[in-house]
Length: 218
Ligand code: DX5
Ligand code: ZN
Image (cartoon, rainbow, N blue to C red; front, side, top):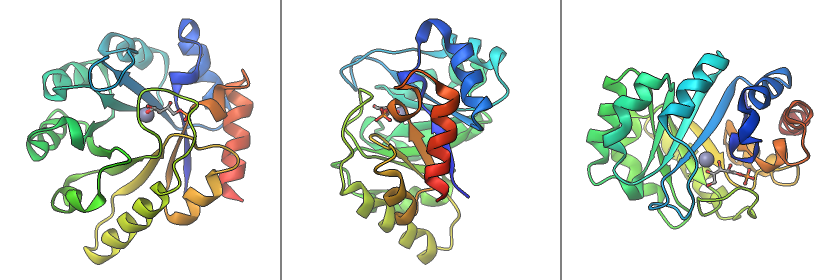
């Protein structure tokens, strides 16, 4: 079963509760929340206070993608705010194993993210501890970028490793997922499909979510 995860990065930040409600009417069960610090990526978005407000506005699963340096420092704050899933970048974690444990200890589902230039093989030893692996199919920082095709090889490789080691983590993909690329990421083996521009870009998150989900299922 595949799910489209609307990314509120492309939503109207002045009306986040409405934008999330629209995605829910369109069938979304999980909302992707992009957290950026202006250091790990060249953009700034939001942090735990906004997640806390979102938590009050929706019962949907909040998937928090941390594009920040030193994520350990903020894990208790995201837990307190009501985040459900927290993903951290391989490239930002000096002690990835410890950070993933830290997320689980705080009652959230841990996940690891890799940038386009990072090899899947570096993750082999932590695969048993993650809820999902997030494959970036653009360089993180902005919505509306073009899909990088070799992300498909990473998705296929993760699927192979999941079979080889008899694991059951999910495979998430983020960046440039739209009506043109969605079939290829599903075919490669991704089941959690993040989309910002393709959901909110035309202004209506309900139709955007519904139509992209249909495209993913056909
Ligand atoms: C990019 C973010 C993505 C972003 C994707 O750094 O991690 O979640 O919202 O946007 P689109 O779907 O427009 O490429
Ligand atoms: Zn993201």
